[in-house]
Length: 192
Image 1 (cartoon, rainbow, N blue to C red):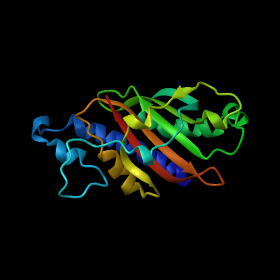
Image 2: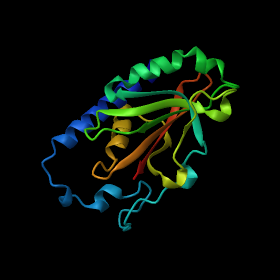
Image 3: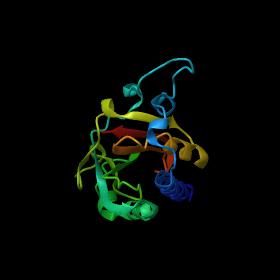
Image 4: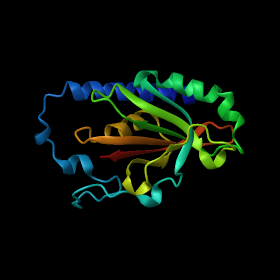
């Protein structure tokens, strides 16, 4: 139940952020890059022109296998339900999965729709179903390091995305416990 609740919250956050971007009255040039792109681990007085990708904190998975659909982001929980119930995917697991990935691509300009892929590492599958490549770790910007997060903290992670820059993809990594339920999460963004 906690899993579904976090998916609903994530969808609500994406919708809220999309709406806030559409309703912004502040000109984009009034926002400084430093305020938006300060790395999570940076010292307050340290100046940095851009976020440096966190290779050591990124995943090593190169491709995932699972369900892909172009969805309204508010309907993302139903894609999770379909993914979890998929006999085709579950029957192809060679072992208990350690991570579940969500890859968001082709995000609409109003941030209400995207192509979402939910899947497992192809190395954990007997036969990959719809193999989807993940962005290289060197191209990612860390939004949330691996950890347990409250709903408010997950919302804060999504709010760290610089929505004034073109977004290539967003990657959410859910580290699973022995019951295949998410225990910790990591969040990344890839800018174009």
